[in-house]
Amino acid sequence: MNQTCYLCSSTENKPVFNENGILIVKCKSCGHVFSTYEQAEHYDGYWGEGNDDYDLDWWDHAHRAIYTEFISNFMQKDSGTILDVGCGLGFFVKMVKDKKPNWHAIGFEMSEPAVKFAKEKNGLTTVYPGMVQSSGIGKGSIDIITLWDVIEHIPKPQPLLEYLYSLLKPGGILFLQTPNVPIQLIKANLKVALKGMKPDVHYLEAKDHINDYSRKTLSMLGAQTGFQSTQYYVLTPILSFAGSKSSLGKIGKMLFYYFTKLIWIVSFKTIMINNTLFAIMKK
Ligand SMILES: [Zn+2]
View: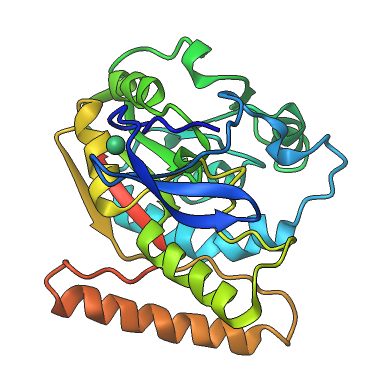
């Protein structure tokens, strides 16, 4: 069990959740929330052994709205270079290529089976297996870097972010999507209060999500690794389109999203009750 805070190295913490025996703790010094589960630093088992048994409804359909919103909000220049780190099956890189053909889009992914899918099924030629740190990409050559649901999986995120910072052009941006821990904790506690702790439920995904960020702690990480500023956005939620049974759930989710957006705006961007953080770190 790891007890050392990944952001400030303090070993003083208090438990905030117990996920089937794995403690999630909050650092008493800086307030960072992290799982005490010791995950390998470069874990690549997330995508399985390449049996192509991927949930495409989730990885493709459910992400289309947010990818579209990202591209229209943050890729307004006619051309540039964008790097997607932890690109998974390549659906984001593919959408960039389709919508912004003058941009050069590159993907990196630790999982060989996922890269194989990206190449063979999504027809991508600029998606590479392995660690981005060994890519040889030129310093100061990238306009935008994206980390979709990646940062929470990495135990010690500073070396990666410092490296990505070095790849960005001056004024370039790093975009991160990650769960918003204060809200995730409320949801997890509610689930347990209503239904009891179930062994097969992933409340905070204690074995996969090693670092659980809030706006405060994600901004701390950005400052530690050299970024000028970290700004937050309320963007379209990731929606699953599975069957008619969940379409009511989908409508509910959209209504909740409009409500969260309203709260965010009327509170002058101070109150965020969304599940997910969308952050832009600026070089
Ligand atoms: Zn700390």
